[in-house]
Length: 429
Ligand code: DSN
Image 1: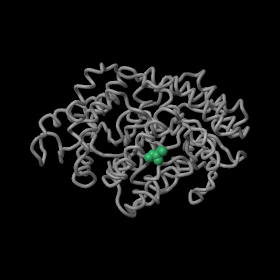
Image 2: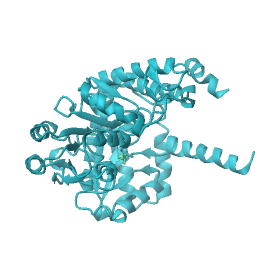
Image 3: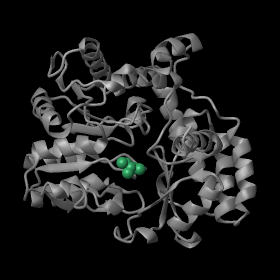
Image 4: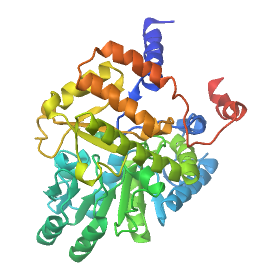
């Protein structure tokens, strides 16, 4: 075996062992897929092309893929009580790029949240929205809650007459006021887009309001955060006209082939959420709240205290008094606790080494079976590293021991090893 080959194999083995078995992963935008999702993902479909829409492809050989895409799209749409779903965008950013292109033109205004108020970079001047020449106008936010200030947002929308209004965010601890902002968007003829990447699984589980029911015209999303599917994107809407317009842009403009092995995996993940989503999503929010409380009890400054800290999977810490986000995140990594430093409302987006926040998400540890009592232990580990400055190696040993109790994916279908073997046989032999 060549040195390069050995290095590649061993790097991924080490990664799998470390991130998959030895760390407490609290990155809010990640999750783990179930063994059955993994088995259908690892399929011959990953070798194939199917440009276009089902049954109207530019390639032969897609008969099963066509049926699969129709079925998975219907399942996905029905889970969110949407009329239409396009599963072809290969990421949330591509979904946003498609929708921004469909409904905005260079020089037109788009009402967005500030990056420091939680917006995804694709909604900003630095991302695709800016590159399309759209002019972001920022809706003011309530700083401790990271939600738009309704009165100010409504008056800004009336004044700026944007073509697009974008809600939903990468940093989100409380539901956004979609209903109120939908009314203002309607008045000025803007399309209201809700980026549900972070809260998609919570919507499916009924613990976060469905933006389509509150007046959003479109949901754009990724499919791998609280929704525990393969990495990818999707667009949902109730309007046939919007769906057609968007679909004509997904291909041929933003996606050529749409990574076909995602489709079966998305279908299985949607079925898992249909079956277990309510329990899963409820536990996520209970865990996030308990973690926030436990951290607050240990002297951390946790955002949203006045409203119960969080109603999502996220907990936000202001760690300016603990050395800042970068330093805390690095120290925690040494102890095998994985978080990211994050911008908070008072930070300057261009000062990425100097951010005040730590963003925590509990969706993955919840999927691995952690409950409220375990959140106390997680909070204690964080406290020992950040506040007490305990030796990272000592905490790491305890974290690794703790993780041994959480190795199985919950809220997922049980699949026999025979069935998994049959599904993966052709590719693994
Ligand atoms: N930037 C990612 C996140 O962590 O929220 C989403 O793309």
